[in-house]
Image (cartoon, rainbow, N blue to C red):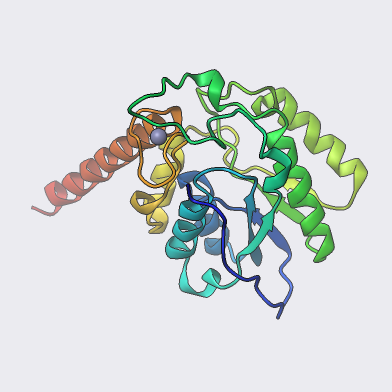
Length: 234
Ligand SMILES: [Zn+2]
């Protein structure tokens, strides 16, 4: 389901100074708005690695980016690399029949693939920085999502080429990122990042659970702030 990804590539005009790994999920969407708020010139790179939800992710990304950025998404397709993967990120489960556990959602080397592909793309267009929206996640089960790995790969990539890795949200929780998103006017409720379903949020996978908790917490904070403003006015 959800295969293949369709859509053409953006034709160059002005080359950006940075590349953002973007998936249509909450973290990378907030990072896009965060970069825009700082005047960073960037291009979004969407990686189709064979994930069952690629079409939904890409459609979401194009919908929630600011209008000026929507036509600038570069889609890189490497799905054939993982077409034999048993991961439920690639082989979509039947939620009525299949039991999915956390270990079913791991793809070895996935994040290394992301960062390598992103860095190579950034170098190819002359961008100096690759932004990635890794956060301090409770569910970082994969070895290539640990702080040790990300610190190590940042140093290593700096030696290999001229592209610098930046992960501004690395020490933040998803709730903290969601609060930043609200403050920037990012459409965080429209983001998509389900590991189990290709079309609708399942509500129970690690991504869905974290996303729902973050949205609720951020909304509560905003409501408290609004009440505080109201109280001080009246
Ligand atoms: Zn889910």
